Length: 398
Image (cartoon, helix red, strand yellow):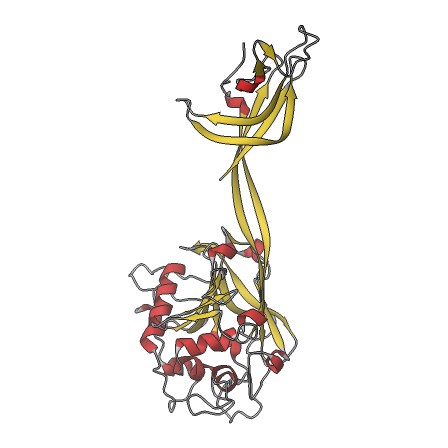
């Protein structure tokens, strides 16, 4: 009698878990607009962030790569000591504080008294409130922050620890135009040693510290291996300190602090080379970032990105079913074409006593009420007769 259904036993089912990684390269020519002339950059009327696509964003084939925005905390100017009181630092100040606060409460959480815990460049999420949260944090707390929020299409389940690398141009160029000499000197920012030293006390999951590991120029705000930001692996978010764009200018007045040796105001923000807010090359990094809109800050950073690369991680959970056809099972077919009258078509007509033969092409998995839940096809028909047995491995991924 032909076997139609066979119940699977517990030992016929195995659960497996595999971790897959994919290399994700993002070239600076695409991000900095030298390829699509900003047609792949989407700006919004609210001005809170801008989105970067791998193709002109109006195209149906465009894929969202990441969002970029800028925020700063409520720290007063006197707490920094690194920007001039003559500059107007109020451009979108409320929006910038809102961006910072929103990202900080999601990624860093709150103190026991409800105050938002600010970003710390060393990754320290202290448990002690400084009274009124963002306004009182000093030391290693990041005040001016660039956020890169990568699309889930790229990061999948998470960014693989220890694989992130961001290369940015630091050369000073008096007429920056989206490439060229701005990349005459660069620095590379990596999550060095994160695979073994990542942190787990963020409400958003695991995160690591970003460090400047090597570079080709000397216009750096921080020495090699110094901390310049954080990366949140499951969230797919990079938090970069604005101070990474600060360097010492040889022409800076005595006592004026670190100047913006990148010329970020002139080159990155105003394509004509004219100062956007009335300053000259050598203005303070904090003045540039706080005195200009989120869009201008996003443009400035984006046009300094030379390359981004990382490996994503996909957790693949699978159930493997071993479907066994023993010698006496599945030797006949219920296909109407299997018979011609009372004769089996696939059995030689000259030998009526020959053993029956069937060819397996499909395996169906059914529920307890005989409803089909999944179906699998073989790459070619598999011969089955009383003289052989088959074991088909069916894998369901989810």
